[in-house]
Amino acid sequence: MAISFIGLIFFALPIAFISFSIKMTSRGPIIFSQLRVGKNGKLFRLYKFRTMKVDLSPSLSITIAGDKRITSFGRFLRKWKVDEIPQLWNIIRGQMSLVGPRPDVPGYADRLKGTECRILDLRPGITGPATIKYANEEEILAEAADPVKLNDEVIFPDKVRMNLDYMKNCTFLNDVRYLLQTFGLILKKH
Image 1: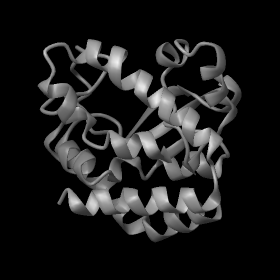
Image 2: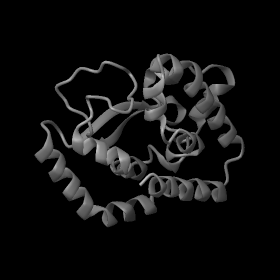
Image 3: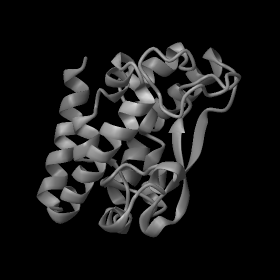
Image 4: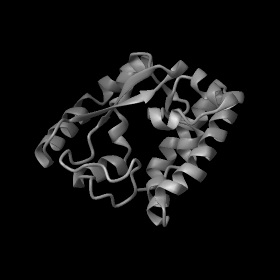
């Protein structure tokens, strides 16, 4: 929570610039919020900078690279992962952590069965091992003949397995390593 509070102060000027740029480049709100499943299955509102047009209805429940719903400025935000900055507020509110399983939307969290449900014992995070492995998930899905099928039958089950493994091997040092790997991946992609 302390790191997130410092982060919000540190990013105050970039947040103002990003907010202004979103308003100048597309219609709609600055912040996108969506119900996600958090610790113990409790629903909460996850916050991100809005990267999509508001006047297009969703064609897929997932986002793929080149999605026409993504604004030009939204592509920049997603590329640098700065659309995630508002989630620092979720951390301050105790709904998320810096590291942990990404919080799923209710439709996906409902697919967890048996011991898989133990993932919900953890506070969801901004990054983690599954997030790092699938850092280029939008590109992987864009290359698939059936992106929803690939996501549902391959990627989602693999993320569940990785999140269970994270849960068994969760340590402070591993979390620091995941944070450093995340920053490294962001810098490496550019």
